Length: 462
Image 1 (cartoon, rainbow, N blue to C red):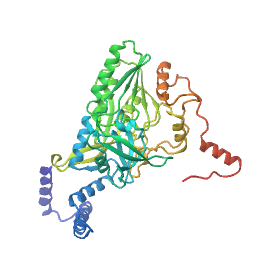
Image 2: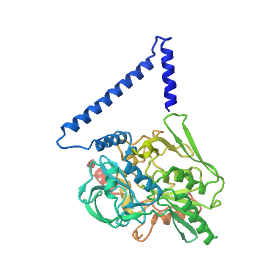
Image 3: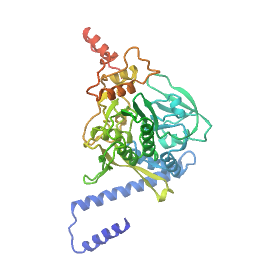
Image 4: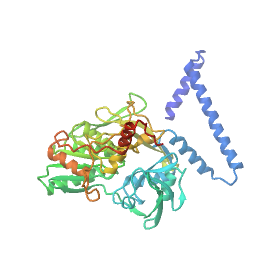
């Protein structure tokens, strides 16, 4: 980089003696740089004033780190500054082992919000759900803290207790006491469901592709007559891009998996699968829901576009951007987590904010069907500064889902989405599976109809 800069400066100086005209573009660039230098000088002035006049002594290092993080998070919800400790924590997470509670979180308007609890962790066992807000840790408010600061409070030595205050829609805030554990996310969970294999992948850490390959190989070895596979990506918050490509490669016999496109329209990077389908063409159904994000959406989108699998469940989270982790001074000064590209499915779809829509929309519970019909579901589109979808598309709004558990279905013991996935495999396709009656009219619809019948407009709740 330094070499390129030196060549550029030399060329400018040599040209200055022979050409008096300065282009408007050069003038504009010079003006922009001057403004930038003024703002950097302003930052130094503010820092000095705070250092000398704030009511109590300040830690300038923490102030600058907070400023860096604020600058980056203003771009989009997934960019940010990682302090050296946070950078080390992130590396532990991607390696697949760390101490904590097992929650994937983000920040929304200064509040920590749950994207997804991880399978088999204290968080999932305590019933924490996607969309929950964490407002306090051990009685201390985390409102206004960065995600990294809040996560640091939640992590700690295994065996120690921690109390989270949870705020959830339609309920009063309540406390949940959890015991920290060494989090070792299970890379794959496999079993048979009758004649069909079932594999659940909770996340995309460094072990994901190998674990999936092992799980499928074991299933087929022990069950040579296996007729198909259900691949469960529900509440999978994503992870590493290379693992998303590797997992897709398990099912695909060559061809494109995903493309990554940056600021420059010519900057397109394509990722392809190698030849060889581990299942040799056996039918596949992928389960997705609102907690399926990022790498999980890459896989679901690739298998859907390539007609390798059909999707059952509800629309995914809609996180279609790529973050590059850029170590600063080898990580000694932390790292930048910077959004550098959007990813696109093989057919050219950007799913940023919109998510992946299933081939058969199935609500897991009657309450979930009610929620989908009456309120905007928590997703990437919920963030005020979310990166826009490149195609200008918008996420599907409130609507009645195609299917929901019928009366008499035991939602505590049964898994309705899984049952419908098995039904699709038995029928041969979503098109061929017998459809269930559409869920009954929801409260909002009934209220609107009753008001119309009475000649009154329904009152809109805000």
